[in-house]
Image: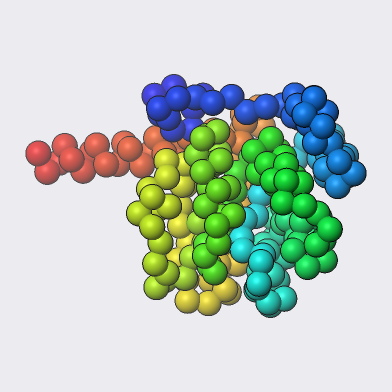
Length: 223
């Protein structure tokens, strides 16, 4: 497996650059005011040269308390010097941004989940169709994912079997999720300081290679 790949994916799909995506939007007459606003924000974040973490989670028909999970996750991410993109905070909330059309939601979420994201944090409860689509995008483009789910959640085998899942934080209370995220970002930022010239994805590559080495050693020991 080449170290430039996150996983040994069946086909390596190249992600569009921000410029390429903007050109595609213009060419297909999809650069509406809402999408243009999202694009302008993405350009500002790009200039900061910080890691972008896409926070996925159900928004339709959820309570303000449930939405607060994404805000809390974003706050933790930003405390470590990165940008945590939560859709409801930046323009595609079903209630406060009800004027945004389904096509615009698709284009804005694709911008942040595919074009901009270094990795995803995906809250899998309550279960939502959008989460699954974003997870599918992540696998197709080799984007690492961290799942957050309650211990007794029932997920499809396909959702659990995607290739770019880095780890799953199972929990009973949200406090555990937040503490797990803090520990993860401590580990990640420490790695970044030691490896300033490496791309974010290399952190996840190295973890996966170590896991494979351990599995090989265990298999050899029991052979």
